[in-house]
Amino acid sequence: MRMLSSLAAAMTVVATPVTAHEFLDYFAYGRTELSPAGYQMVRSVAAYSRTGHPKRILIAAHMDTAEAGEFSEELSRQRAQSVATELVMLGIDPALIEMQGRGASALARPTPPDTSEPLNRRVTVGINF
Image (cartoon, rainbow, N blue to C red; front, top):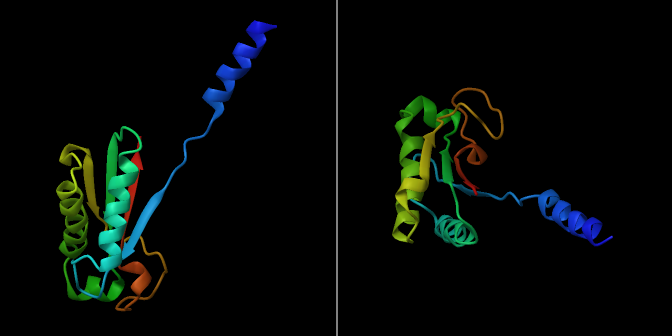
């Protein structure tokens, strides 16, 4: 009987799902600077990453189709870099950070070309433990 309760406890530990959390912030048109909410989001990412031993922190930055027509995809990479720089300043190991500038290739809200859409000008941060 004791062996069965130990097995049940072990199965409970294995079956407990890991809680996933994605962090999100938005940018002003054509800008790469973090907003006050963006700075708070970065602090939340840093705090959450300290709850475990992250293997990777993925920063994916996007732009809307109006920006894609006016700027290069470098704008989305610069947005990712803004977040990464703040994370490093908060003590996150830069070796954990992976940045992706996705341009206007993965729109949160599909729009026609040359459309300004605030929901598409965003950065998402995911942490893999």
